[in-house]
Length: 304
Image 1: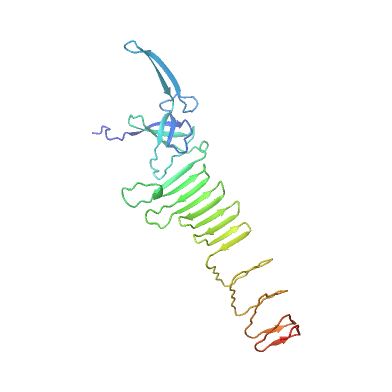
Image 2: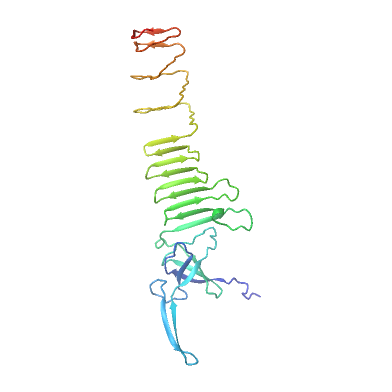
């Protein structure tokens, strides 16, 4: 015979209204249960009121007592089905919620009824996902993948852990207040974008990087930079500067066109056949090994 003894003691207590804005780092709120206070029509508040009472006891001895009373009750957030959510909703005064009670105890829990788009303001939400594969280990900050979205701090952040054999951790952070995005691991590699400063940088732990800073691009590699392509075009409207210890260029055909060319070198060697078209002016000694063909006049200012 069903007698109700097997029914859960956790029960719906009352439809209620939040009496004061929930504190950011807390799961506790003050709420006014309307089904227990159907005639309550005062301002929504969690303020307390002091009551003083006096009288005589059974032995005709006088006594007095002070009592703090309030129309609201304290309740703790109950996540129910959304167990991956680690932070309680940032409910505000006036939002409608549901209160729960366990048996006849003086303990209450709350859940949201719906999101009031007119009342709800800045929010911080953190979701966590266990990364523990072994039993009997409590989930912690460094053993979970977690996602934080905070309009309080103007930050969106995703973090991974490496307690289950992963070689690295990763963090992706969007700072909407500063206007930048960072992607990084725990090994010194990162990608950075600053929208306001028009600054983009890719860098690894070896200090190899590509950086775009407004109208300037910087590149650095300790050992090598290798470019491979079918066609390569470099255009510089004002100047090109190169500095190195050894310079080597190889091609099947080389053409260089300029209005004025100067080669500064203590010693210059040209091997193979050399054809010079146009006038030639020698301003120093010239030693020629092999045949020399000159098309045009040659002005020799020094003997050779």
